[in-house]
Image (tube, rainbow, N blue to C red; front, side):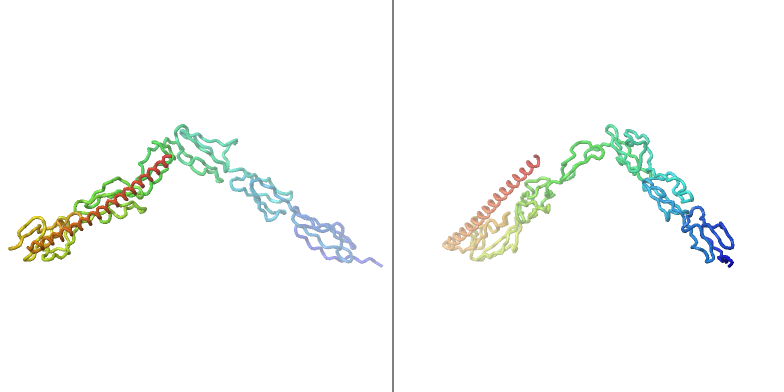
Length: 407
């Protein structure tokens, strides 16, 4: 029986590769597959055709891998793939600059070229500056990124500008170089109500400081008191210190003769004087007020007269109307205490017995008024004593505070 010839269709081509016929007869067809440079064969490289057809599947060609393109000190790389035909791109970290090519390509022999380097960014050195001690890099030849240059001046000169400069990642210094100057300042004028607590001296170098603090709260002396004058005048009064004043003749304190410095830097009650006035609202038995005023200012006079058949009782006799005599002045003057002097007169008949009774009544009235005046004077004296004691206590406390401050 004769042998049957093979019947195989032509093999398909493979991507990125090719095949070659090793042997071909009527009874066998032998092929060998190979890949193009940069690719590797996946599958069997030999393939036979028999009467039953091709004995296995055709192989395929895949790109070769070049592996890691290389580690970069102070930098990194980016690559979509590390196989044949792909490119890896290298980058330096901030503050570093690349030396060499930034790309490597995976070719038939592996990664082409060399791994680049990332060198630190460098800043330029400094030119000489008058009276300046120029800094130099420590244990290095160049100023590199992140290094700090410190400047100082000779003698009494001061650094004007930044004393420290940093070499930045851009290769520029963080500030312009400083200069040296001989700067001296005289002590400034003392602020009102202030004092120096640190930085005593008469002249100061550049950037030397003076520390101030305000004195304790106080009150400024009033410019003036209308119709009065201050008896313990000074520029500033400490907290709770008392100002005392006297009113001019014909005027009296609106509230008190002293006023205390309070926390709001003002005197309370406000020192002020008001005009002295006398009230004339009384009724005169058997007589009348002829000046016809209800209120009299200091020095003004109130005048009276008696009805017919009556006489005015008092010291000096003056003739009144026919058949009657005036035993007092017809006028009474408003004094600085707000009272009329002499006391209000009274009108009496000419009957001696009645005159004596009127005189007795007038004397009793005068005694009462004098007693009332004495009581007022005693109260004023007692208040003055209390004010004096308060003032002495405040002075003692201020002396203690000043002594402690000196310590």
